[in-house]
Amino acid sequence: MTVTSSLKNHRSDYRQRLIIRLYRIAHWASQLRKVSKLSWPIVLPILVAYRFLTEWIFHLELPAATKIGQRLIIDHGFALVVNKHVSIGDDCRLRHCVTIGCKVNADGSQGASPRIGNRVDVGAGAIIIGDIVIGDDVVIGAGAVVTKTVPPGAVVVGNPARVITQKSMLGPATT
Image 1 (cartoon, helix red, strand yellow):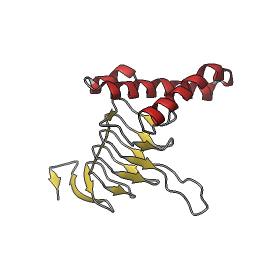
Image 2 (tube, helix red, strand yellow):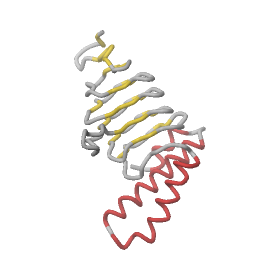
Image 3 (cartoon, helix red, strand yellow):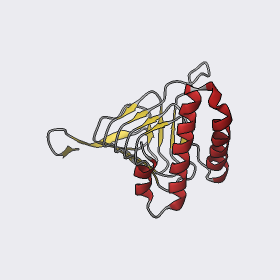
Image 4 (cartoon, helix red, strand yellow):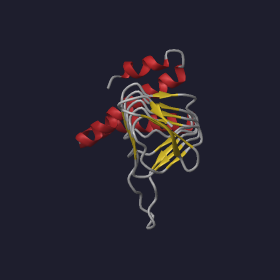
């Protein structure tokens, strides 16, 4: 993953370019921290600065430990909340007020988080929660609440989310 491949998607949006650049640096620091205990004096200031900037200044939660593929686009990245155990594929687009997280178990512990495929487009205000898989080339409509696995090529809308169209791997989209 390179910083420049993610930044090409944000040519004119300097705020989003900064958020992606900060995320990539903080993710590198987070990975370095896991590899070497001696790296704390280097990574701690980076991770603290990243958290301060993203949460207090930009008003979004995108933990450094989150696994994000290349060329992520964050449109109007305000009030974005992503759990640190979420996995997001390449070429995804997240809009404002999106929440991607785990379901809380009855005993208060956190369950597994969603795994999002490549080329997924998430509409404003969408909520994706639980141990689910969002397939490649999925479009999630604004305000959708997704709590079940979504097959590749689907368009989902509503609360609870339902598939309204799905591309067939062999032919045109079906309704």
